[in-house]
Image (cartoon, rainbow, N blue to C red; front, side, top):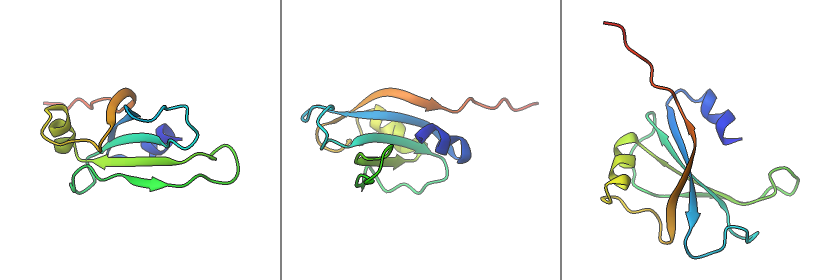
Length: 103
């Protein structure tokens, strides 16, 4: 679902799964957490948006999306911008290929 959305959003350059260091990820109450790096968003820091579960499969799980600019993502990697308490970066699930610019 996230990858399909990213392919439609030209500013989306990366999606990374976030994991909890506090709550087990297999706990049904623990949301699926994604960090999206979007060139088209406005920088507001690391503030997640939470979405409740849909009553019907396949989206019957809670989720949280943390959308940041590329500069904010660099700050997260450098330890200058903190993720929400107990969240850590996990695997990259989408990365847009860089487009070569002709001279």
